[in-house]
Length: 632
Image (cartoon, rainbow, N blue to C red; front, side, top):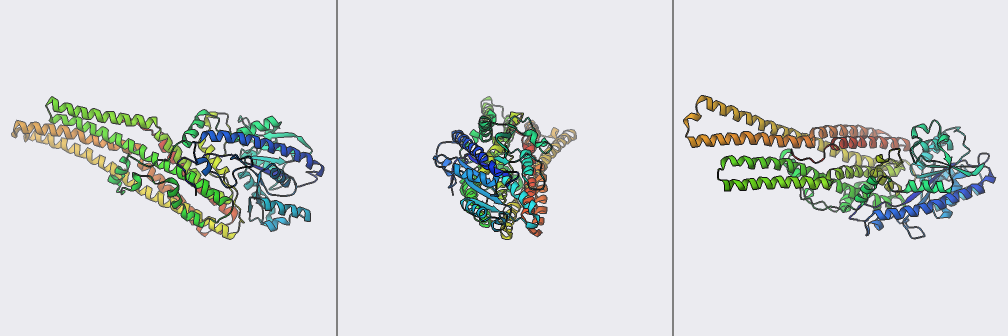
C-alpha cells in the first residue's frame, strides 16, 4: 500500500466508450473499413491530447514520489509516461467490437461490461467466427464486469450495461444511423442519456463516416435539460482540430484561474502532524465531557491510520485483479490525506475562534483588575499584558485568515466525503458523488473539488467480477457495516455531543447572567438597607470594587460563551446529525431485509449517497458563512 505526504496527484486515464449498431442494415459491411479508419484517427488524437494533458497534470503536483505512488500497475504506457487510455465496450458484434479492436491496436487497454454472464452473452452471437472473436477480446480485457441480466428482460439488461459503460466513460463514440430509439437499451437511448449526463459524444454515421459530428457544449450553449427533447440538435460538424480541442478541454485542468490555483494549492499541501491549538478540544472536554485524546494534539500518518479504519471494508470487499488494487493504492491514500487535512483544519479553525473569544474575555478580566490597583507602575504591567493578549488575538486571526483555515476545512471535508463514497460506488460500476466536470456559461462556477474527485474516479477500473448473489451480498454487507453503521454511530455520538455542548454552554451563560443580576440585587439591597453604611471606608471601597469587577466580568464571560456557541452553531449540528442518523437507520433497515439484486442495490446505494450528500450540503451551508472573525 502506497504512502505519501501529499495528496494523490491527478493522472490522465482517458476512457472512451462505444455504442452502436451490430450490423446490417444499420451498419453495412462495406462501411466497416471507412468507419474503422475514422475511429483510428480519433484514437490517435486522444493519445496526443492525453499525453499533453499529463504534462500539465505533472506540473501541478509536488516533486517526489507522490506521482509514482499514485500509479496502478498498468498506468505506464509504452512511451513511458503516466497516461493510460482505455476502451470500455460491451463487445457486441459491429460497433462495439470495431472500436474495441481499434483501441487495442492503438495501445489502449480494454475493459468490458456485459449485460449477462459471459457464457450467456455468448449466445447472442450465432457464428463460430463471431464467438471466437468475442472470446479473444475477453481474454485481452483488463476487466470484465458481468451483470446479472435476465434473458426474459434482455432490453433492460442491455440498457444496464450501456448505463454502466456511460458511467465509466469520458468520451463516447457512437456508430449510429441517427434514427430515434425503437426500444429500451438501443443506441439512440444511450445517446440521449449521454448528452443529458454531459458526456461528450462523437457521432460517426455509417453511411457517411467522414462527416464526424460532436455533441459537446463547451460553452454551455446547449443546456443538458434540452437533450432528451432534441438530442440531434446538440451535434455539430467536427474535424480533427475540433475533436482535439474538445479532448483538450475534457482532459484539461480547471479553466478558471481561481479553481486551478486552489487545486495546485491542495496538491502541494503537505500532510500535517501536530496540532498546537487544542482549545476546541479543551472546550469539548470542559463542557461536553469528551475525554482528551492523542489525536487532539498529534495526527497519525494519514494512510496507515485510514488503512486501519478501512480494514473491515477491505476484508468484506471481494478481491479482483483490476479494481481492488486501485482502491487500495489510489482511492484509500487520496481519501486518507483529504480526511486528515480536513481534521487538521477543523481543529485549528475551531480552536482559533474559541481562543480568540476566550482570550478577548481574559483581556477584559485583566483590564478590570486595574480596579484594585492604584500604583501606576504595577498597573502598567496589566496594560502591557492586556495589549499582548490583544496583539496575539489579532495575529491569530490574521494568520488564520491568511492561511484560509476556514476555506480549507470546508474544501477538504467535502472532498474527503466525496472520495470516500467512491468505495461504495465503484464495486457496482456506478459514477459517484462528484459531478462530472462540465463547462458552464459562467466559468466562475467551476469547481476544483468535482474536477479532482472525477479525476480519481477515472483511475478506478471496472470490477473484474461476476455480478451474482454472493457478490451482491458482500457489497451490501460492506455498505452496511463500514459505511452506514459507521455513519450512524458517528452521527448519533455527534448529535449527543453537540447537544450537550450547546446545552451546557447555554446554561453556563444563563448562570453567569443570573449571577450578575443576583450581585446587582444584593448590592442594591445592601445599600438601601444601610448595611454598607456600617462598614469601614476601606471595606466599603473593596466591596464597591469587587461588585464593579464581578458585574463587568460575569457578563463578559457569558458573552464570550454566547459568541462561541453562535460561531459553532452546536444546536443546528446536533439536529442535523440526529436527522441523518434516523435516515441512515431507516435505509439500513430496508437493506437488511431486501434480497439484493444489482438494480435494487444500485438504487439503495444512490439513496445512501443522497442522504450523506444532503448532510454534507447542510453542514457546508451552516459553516460557509462563518469564517474567522475578530471578537469585536
